[in-house]
Length: 431
Image (cartoon, rainbow, N blue to C red; front, side, top):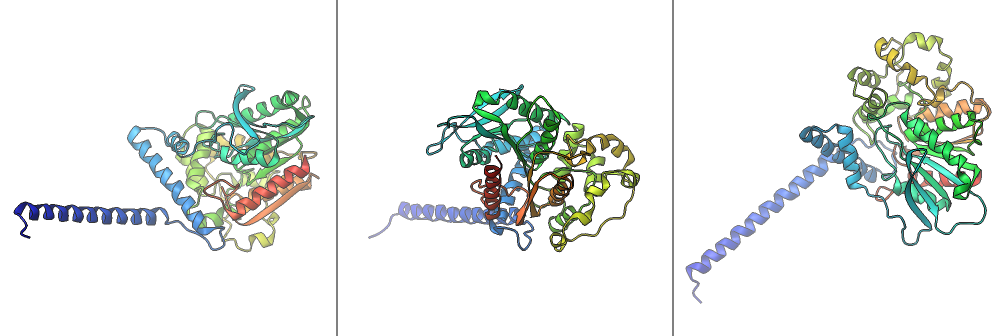
């Protein structure tokens, strides 16, 4: 058979198309490989739980961070707002009812604050216990919608009412706005507990990270308020309870292992969020002082009654054995910044470790993690509670890191599941 010239041309066209597709596919694969290599280029210390999953978790977070910065530049939108938008774009809450679940969620208001409430569909007779949960996010990000994937399983495991608080965030609302919202909701709920078939003497409070700090602070102020009963317990997941010492062994070890812009939660983000929540703006002097581990003044350390509660000797030696830490000599930080922020740093509504008398506070469950810069904060709080006779149970999780808590798909970590199970067990046995 003799082929015509048009047949030859058709064959050439097909070959050119195939070559173009191969080139395109090669470029695409190369771009994907480079992208994966770029976003998976994170330090992964030996001993961290589920290291490959951790690496992907960090890569996903960094990708969202980069997109948020791009949005910030292109749209002249403040970074923290862009970041919130991206998180909500990639994370959606479950519907009110989920097949196979005995929990129904709804959004309402209490004391003028939006809350997401989880209630059993098939209630039990008589007044029941309840849990208040306060989400983390450095006082600037996070929401009840983002935490739905964590709080719903808590409610399902407890088969009880759980309340998640949508407190105000920085920079729109500065300290003590977050505390005020959480305290007001908690007090309102205790005063109206019977309306929700809840026993007001069997209500516990909990939270993670900044939410853990807020939960601890609220438990203190509810204890002082004689119009409502005391909370049953406080369950705190890697809480941030003080800021007078930002040169703790765990903080400096974390910087040595991950750098100031490494890890799931970076120090640059923490410093920026702190500035936004305290001052309503990013103050480079405050941020630099935080990153340099030097915020308070030398005279403060000599005179303060609080200094002994952040003594590094309180940290058990077996915990410190793996630390990469050399304590920096005391020297004065920026006096102007210190005078501007010390009222907040010494305020128990932000830093619950600063409360002088811990007597008779609710019993506590406190979780800390091996690879968490905030590890020592939890240890300091346990020590002070126990010194004042408060029953405080401390669990330390090897291989854990800040953000590991819970069975939240697709980033479920063995140590996070263990922590979640211990958290649930503590609540069930202390109601």
